[in-house]
Image (cartoon, rainbow, N blue to C red; front, side, top):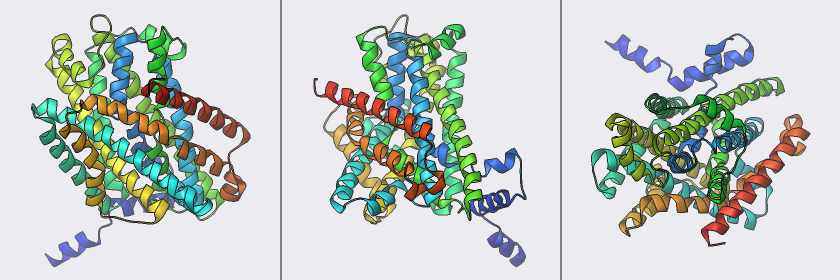
Length: 432
């Protein structure tokens, strides 16, 4: 009995085993695809931000209103996301510090405080959208009012956050499983929907804007693509894994990181495409005016059957819970990075959930609140984007791993495009 207890205590955790595999791979003693899996995790966590409930709402409107016409916008958005997430990962990997910490140590104090406040507001706005989306799914699935559904969602997300105490690997695997649920759900949805794959392939690479409404929706898709909180988070996730001992190991880690970013965000992009394709097949011909998640769910049952509606809610709940967990992690990292201040996780979770409860208690439409939160994200977005491009292009910060000229050019163009589109979103929100 004692021998068994000793062996159990002595057995390495999932995180420790992952670190051992990583060190062996960096030393060149382990190779192969299975070894590469040990380095996977940060980009999978970051990818959740690109398939959150806000994406559900936007993609449903795009598919219902314009069929396949805006698929190319989803593809473009995903390519921009890959670029900036790879820069964020590179920053954390090369410097050993996250974006918020570098801002704190490199910029004037007043600027840092302003950036911290703006970033905190963006994290709360993000969590409002994500938490609200998951709660909508629970309310519809269990036929509950919003407030009890929000309490259930809060309990589940807080429970998942406890996995972080066991190291990075258990939480990453949990989030990966939830991403898998979303992906499989939409794969199942596609089998229930009539799809013209030739038209899908054509519209995915051919830009077209049918009318002014499509332009507004395209602005919404691209302008809200890069999430402020996940740019901070990805750089921080690279700190907690394995430290490179020299530039050769940094180059190896960077290669694995870039591969993971392409794969993880590629999967997220395919899920977004599947959302648009499903909405097009289900709603475009007879219900092009679908604008809310609740309406989409109710319309799916008579069109595709109760199974399709149930799968839709399963994907929405998995999306809301996983993205809400990631949003809380990002908020904690932003606070610690900018001001070095740590609060208990339950306090952080309570603070970020409070606006959602206030919104529902005041009788505000949940979907409207979800869309409105994207305006706050648009205002906050310039902070991490500009800081990220600036830091990763500096030799003093990155050494020989600074951005190449072509990377800088692409990042600057994408920054200008995304920021201009976000200004358009803000102007539209205020009646401009």
